[in-house]
Length: 148
Image (cartoon, rainbow, N blue to C red):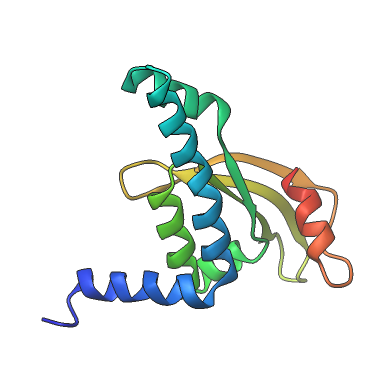
């Protein structure tokens, strides 16, 4: 019973908040949404108006260039990122997708933006073809640039 899905998910979230920078950053940033909701409620707006305002005014894009590779390799870290998208519906993930086009190893690179569909799945919003591999050197600045 201790290894049921409910407990495993709770332990993963607990560990992520203590060890993973991404999880801590996203959880902290999403507190802004809670604060904006509280402010709107104190100003007398109804729930429907508040939800419309949040969709219109609040969004969060996480640039995670290796998410596509983690997803292809069925890495559990991809599941953790998807869990964040399901927990925080205004969060989007931008990643670089590498599609191999022939046996010689030539590839096409795409910048992809995904979000949670609200029903437990992940939906692709945009897919933009890049002129080449955007990762030069360490990759961090290029990763952030492709997300824009």
